[in-house]
Every structure is written in structure tokens, then in C-alpha cells.
Amino acid sequence: MASPPSKLSFLFSVSFVFSLLFPFSLARSPPPTTATLDVSASLKQAQHILSFHPAQSSDPFSVSETPPVFFNSSSSSSSSSSSGSVFSVPLHSRGSLHKTHHTDYKSLVLSRLERDSSRVESLTSELELAVNGVHKSELNPLPTEIKPEALSTPVTSGTSLGSGEYFTRVGIGSPAKQFYMVLDTGSDINWIQCEPCSECYQQSDPIFNPSASSSYSPVSCDSRQCSSLEVSACRGGKCLYQVSYGDGSYTVGDFATETVSFGNSGNINGIALGCGHTNEGLFVAAAGLLGLGGGPLSLTSQIKATSFSYCLVDRDSAGSSTLDFNSGFPADSVIAPLTRSRKMNTFYFVGLTGFSVGGQQVQLPPGLFNMDQSGNGGVIVDCGTAITRLQTQAYNALRDAFVSLTRDLPKAGGVALFDTCYDLSSRTSVRVPTVAFDFGGGKSLDLPAKNYLIPVDSSGTFCFAFAPTSSSLSIIGNVQQQGTRVSYDLGSNRVGFSPHKC
Image 1 (cartoon, rainbow, N blue to C red):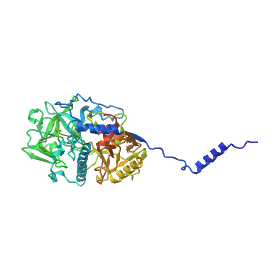
Image 2: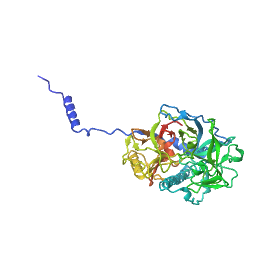
Image 3: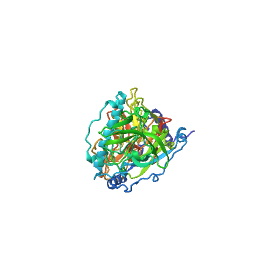
Image 4: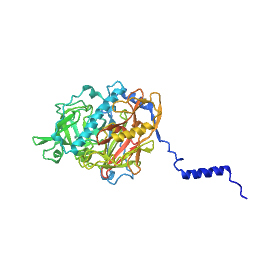
């Protein structure tokens, strides 16, 4: 006679049958993934930038100080480093060159955010004009008073396509003279202040003298370069250019070709650039601007670069990294599709599909970030915009997901464009839910905690570093890009993100 089943066996049988009948009643959501925010280190760095004194030497960031970083991994396309010369130049944040006159960190942050908002407005206006078929030559810049105190800020944005967030060091002319130039992926025209200067702003280097360069050559009015300008004129058979920015900043002068040198990497002759004799605006310290957009007059197009990459150090850091041309992708890059607009070839649109917070995907309508047939919408990567702007619906969903997982953190009032802030003054570090960009196909980029919770004062107020926009255009800004090498494969239309490659 068989023995009766044990009590343990009976309970197991009941549990098994119950799990079959009610499979979801026993399921548990996985715990949210988290990242550590070093509150103390962030506040220490914020205090440091207020007292930091840039090097006093005539050339504090020589080209030999930052060694080139080349990537030739198996993930790079065949059109990358093998088809062109590899150039590398140092890349610095504005704060490492131009000392701030702000005495408290909050006022510095507020001035940055104000100019950042103006830049975003100008970027969206630029796209709207292109979509509606309005040519810039049909417009006149609005006169805007530029406040003197704004000239002393460490990150001085042209509040338009020409921002002053990051500088690179290149040589102009023959013999080459080294200049600090603003780096901008949101514009195309390269230009530099030139003698004789009828009106020039203050820059850290001597003003470029074209008469001292044997390779300087004016561009003729009937040239391809002149006809590619959005706003041009002709005087004595020579081409004149004008670039105006959203805050009233502008540069006007002769359009010419010159030799551009990339440190010890080499040089390229015949680069078209503006030689500005009348320049005004918030470009203090930089000698001019390098446009890295996708248009025909950008530096990347003129040197026929198959790829370029940069890694942005923290804006409050005195460190530096590199800007590289024709180098391959790092092997660990998160790859996303890179698309271009038929209406606006300057901007780099990336195939963002959504976000994850704490390891869980944020629910968004399918195709929310797609560009429509008219050219509206989409997401661009921009090194000059600081704070990532998202369509309001996407921002609200991302913010709400983050807030739902940070109920244990003490709240603080909103600051400027930030509506989600925390009082971390009593903490040295905190665990916060991870935030990731999703690019479809299971590809995602986890952001470091300091790239989405940033200090807005020196007393411990941190804010969620995203903002909504009423525009259909979304922008991935440089706060989210910091510490990540962003690689643009122009031949294969891909963009790669690789953390910790500065």
C-alpha cells in the first residue's frame, strides 16, 4: 500500500497548479537599474570652475599637449580611416580658456541656460525657414543690444548656430598661425577675424593678418564657393560674405581660401573661409568658428572627411580631449542610423526611438521622433546646445518615469527651464535610476548619472537635465554627450556613441 503524500509535496502541487491557473499573480517586475551620482565631486567641480585661472602662457594648449586618439576598429566602415588622412586637434571647454567673472555658480548656470534657450530657438527657426523655402538673403538681422556682462561668461554662445561651448586649436595660413576656434556641428561657414579690423571683439590670439600669409587667396564672385553662400555680395570681382546669428551677432568680410593646419597631423590647402573685418557678438576669446555641419562649405565637406569624432569633457573641467577626422569607430560604440534632411543639409539627424528609465522602456507613440515628408520633426545631435530638448509629449513621459522612481529623494523648486529638481545638500552620493537613449534594434546608450542630474548652484540643488520644446525638432545636447566619443560615419550614414573615450 502506497504511503500518503507528504505535506510538502501537497503544498508544492497546489502551488504548481495555482501558478498555471494564475501565471501573472506570481510574476514580479525586476528591480529598476540604477547609477551612482557623486554629489560631492559635482559640487567640488562647480566650485573649482569659479576660481579656476586659465594658463597664462601665450599658448597654454599646444598641439603636442594632447596626443591624437585614433580608432581603427573592426566596426569602422571601409570608407573611414583607410581612404583619407587622419587629422587630430585638441578640443577644450570654454572654461579652460576664458575665466568667468561670476562669483556664484547659480548665476553662471542661469546665464548659460538663457543663452542656450536662444540657441535652440535659432536652430528651430533655421529649420523652419528651410522647410518653408525661405532663403536667408531675404531676411535682415534684428538689431539686438549685447550686454557687456554677457561677454565675461565662460560659455558664451552665439545663441544661434555659432556657440562658444567648445574650442579647438588649428593653424591658419602660411606660415601657419595657431588660433582658438569655436567648434560647431550646427553650422557650415568657417570664418576668422581679420586685419584690418573695422570692428572686432576681443580674442585671446592676435588677429589674423591675411597679408602675412602666402596662401591667402580671395574667392571670385563667379566661383562655386561664393554661389554656395546663403548671403553674399560682390565688390571689385571679389566675393563678400555675411553670417548673422539669432542674438544679433554677425560677421562680415571677404570670402577667401586658405591653408588649414591640424597640429602635427598635416594640413589642407584651399579651404574656403570668411575673413571677417566687421564682427560683433558673444564670441569672446575665440578667433572664429569651424563649421562641422553637413553643408558644402563646412570644414568636414571641404576636406572630404569620410568621418569625424569628438569627445566633450565636462564644461566645468579644465581637461581636454581631441577632435579627429577620418578615424574609425571605437569597438564598443553604440551605433545608430544617421539621416539627412532634403531641406536642411547642415543638421545631423539621429535615429532615436525612445528612452529607458531604470531599465524599463518609457511608453511613447510609435514614430514620435520621425521626420515627416515636409522635413519637420526628427532629432539632431548638436555639440553647441547644452540641454537636450524633447517634444513636450516625450519629455513629460521621460520626466514622469524618472520622478516615479525617485520618490525617496527630497524635492526642490524648479530652476529656469528645469521643472524637476532635488535638494541633495545632505548627501555625498545617491543612487538614481539609469536613463538611456534607445536607438531601435535593442541598441541603447546608458548615460552616466552626472549627464542627467546636474548641479545648478553650489549648495546642492540638482536638476533633471532635459527640457521640453514646443517645436517638432528635438536636440541631443552636449550635457548628455559629455564623456562620450561621438563618431559620425559620413560615408555609411551612421553615428556611434562610445562612453569613456575622451
